[in-house]
Length: 294
Image (tube, rainbow, N blue to C red):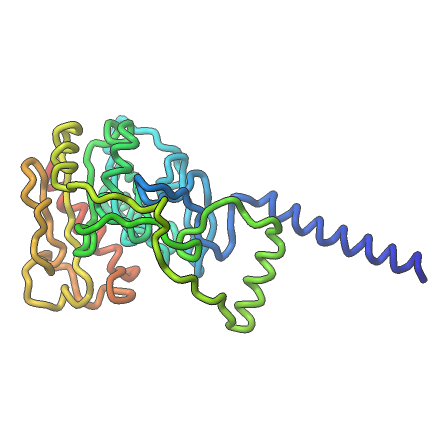
């Protein structure tokens, strides 16, 4: 009897160990998970490079510079577009081929390099460009996709639930099992109180001055695409919201999505994110703007 128990125990341990090894061999592909992030008090947070996975059925992938593409960053002899934004560009609810970057590349040709993070503000985005001058130098055009919430305070890291930090859990098998149980039972972890740890708090900067400095340093067209939320798209304001001060920086190109006849208030998956159809139309609007600028 004792020998049988030992054999069964050893077999169970071997199965568990094998499952854990199999999960780790798949890393950094992560199933039904958000990407891991780096966080600090300069950029707030940024997805770590060289990851891929799925979240709520949508596949995401990040290259060597945290861009939303499988290709390592390498400017081409053709057309290279740097696409900068928040969750509108990140497209967490949309699978990789249908995200704004790939759709813009399909509509425009050339290469599109999307850099974004959910809930980034313009200051976070400008910090990435200061940290990666080789990206600015390698692009032929820089395109920001901006909504009304992007012009205020920078976004700081708050909680692991939205922007999880490494290291990975000790057991990937345990994490996968918990996710499976939660899907079956509908039980979710209690929400963590949202506050900004003092060490992670990003100090506000003058984004008008920072954008002006970028125009001077980049010496290439910089396009601001102003994107309205669903309520703004149906409202009376010509652009969806009052134009912010960054719209008056000399040397930039401004485009209001709402002013394009192709855009519809029905092109939303929720109150702000574009649907699949909306993403394709938005890509077409950006492509038209860039083609007109050639």
